[in-house]
Image (cartoon, rainbow, N blue to C red; front, side, top):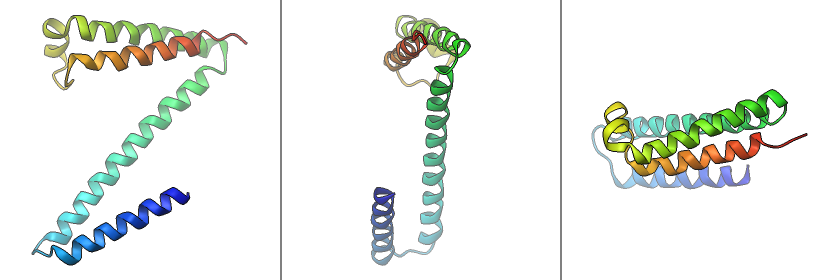
Length: 122
């Protein structure tokens, strides 16, 4: 909470200073639009991270959840390896929004984490 307050204080100071030194006709509406888009992106990323971590914690809490985590982990490891190996032939034509074949490395690492968490016993 303390760091959040400091970040808000800093953001308010930067925004206020920017408004004092850069005044144009539609500056205020563009600034608020940028702030709204940035806030929406921040809330979206926070929501995705929260759901991901909550799913991992819930998956570790029961034997069935651990089996699901193991299955998802194997899928993501294979998907990450396929992203690297078959980028030009299969992956990029099907999913052109993926920026690079090296995105398969964190996907495979996430799958490894899921396999590791799914393999725990009670």
